[in-house]
Length: 339
Image (cartoon, rainbow, N blue to C red; front, side, top):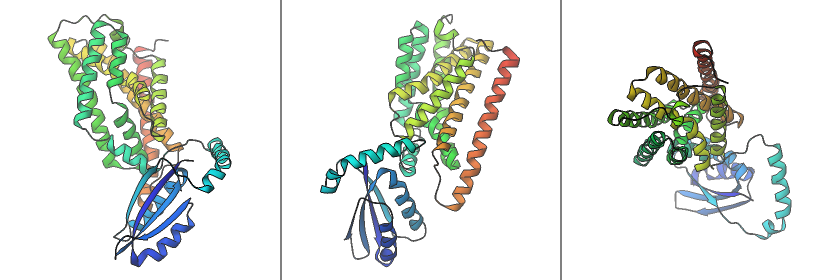
């Protein structure tokens, strides 16, 4: 059984009505204590699948009345006579839920917290991007696939890209701008490092690692779509670790290095090919992520935000899809696709 603890601090004058509504919501256990003269403390032990419903109610109440505070705390272990006796039955119910669910995910509030954390340009993010760009460029110079893969492990590119798609689904344009800017900074650092190395050193660009990233094939579309889907599903389950991060970096890091090397060498035709590859990868990742997040039913609570999210979600899918189709048309008509 996966449980989480919700602590709600409720002003005394609103306690009776809020307490009655909270008790009607799904919960495993419920405790009430006096936190101070002004507020009561309610602790609710809730199944992870039901957390969002309880938090949505508390959020709607907090928007109207001051004095409410809510915390969500993960529960590692919970033992009682009921849980021990009903363990087998609950496991069966969980299996049935998993079979019926289209996509399992954490609560909207947990996902928003994760996305906000990955939408900010931090020193740690900047340093890791810098180091991954240096290692990746060295991999291109040495024509070493192992070194290039190592750079993908370092690169934290998954966070801001997936955060951009998530913000688009919620219609949170401020968060969308922050996540997009963080992604742009990451891409810019990689390109600048590659340009700098090629301006300083006489680098041989006739390597396999470079040549394969200066042309777009139909397989690159499938790679980017799969990477975006994997990254978004991992984010939904809060499991976006290194392996999934590498998958996203496969589609983002090497093409950006190739783009910087092309600019540094003044190879404009190769730059055109690598730039197309970068754009195709980014748009395909965003498209698949937006679609995956749409399928989960993630919605804001307040009516105005719901309306904005509905419009933003549709516009995001249409906008990104149009760009992907346009890029496909440019590649087919302008230079063809190698199969």
